[in-house]
Length: 419
Image (cartoon, rainbow, N blue to C red; front, side):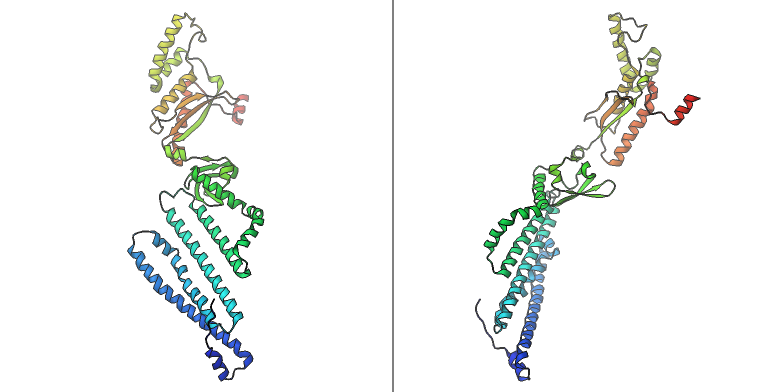
């Protein structure tokens, strides 16, 4: 930097009024610093009043939302602070020309101030861009916050290296070379951040998780909607209104369930079984068939099946004095068909997706008769209401087919047995 010099009128004035030689230098430095501060404050006020007024007028005229967000995030305010920093940097060689030691310190502080302002501008600009992109439909389900945090981390690291180089006088390249020796330590310290960044890229590329998805991760007791995806964590708002914070990389390393497919199809699965008491399962005699033929949902099926079975048994000349001979209808089989037909005529059940009623392997608690279908309404409250209405009916209807639902005996059962 060039060596500028000016005569210090303050020094001469102080000597004229009788200030001693030993103290005059200190008073001169103090007055010079005060003058610099006043000039910087004036420059700051002028920069803000001129620059911000011009920008405010331009923002009002434009239709784009980005400049409004830049103004809201005070990017231009931070940018305006460079004016006093430049004034400080270029005025100090003139004002403090007679004080080399003070000049060195003030110049160093001026450069530090400029670096901090630049870092602040980059940070606020990143926040503004993140806010702007988050409002766009295309980016709503993308981990914008993760990339924003990465830019901020790089900004802080680069700024710290420049500041370190400024104070130590060491070139930046040797600092970077030296930092290579500490790579392992850095990787250890920023392990979660690095893993989170890699995970966020994979999640975005493979479209694994979006903000608003319903996810279930039993390992972390998480079951609810994703509300935030950042570089290090994913926040899930559970159905009990608690919030679970999960490491981002856990969505790559651990298993989880994403219920987005359910939302996309507009249908939610119902998969529940009735446990039938096996001792109540039997062949249907004529009396039972006559009673069941009055049930409208199986009336046509029963008539068709009776004729088919009768014809088959007559062709093979089975002795029907015993029900076990030949082909026969069973009460659980008819109840299964009744349940299928009940689902098919239910307006709340999707007819386009899988719909079936099946028997599972018998258990000590009875024979499971599983209902597998999909509700058209995926809202939790409505879904539970549809499911409850369905099984209310089936539990009550089982008795009409001379079937009993298994339940463990209670104290009242033992009391009745004794009596």
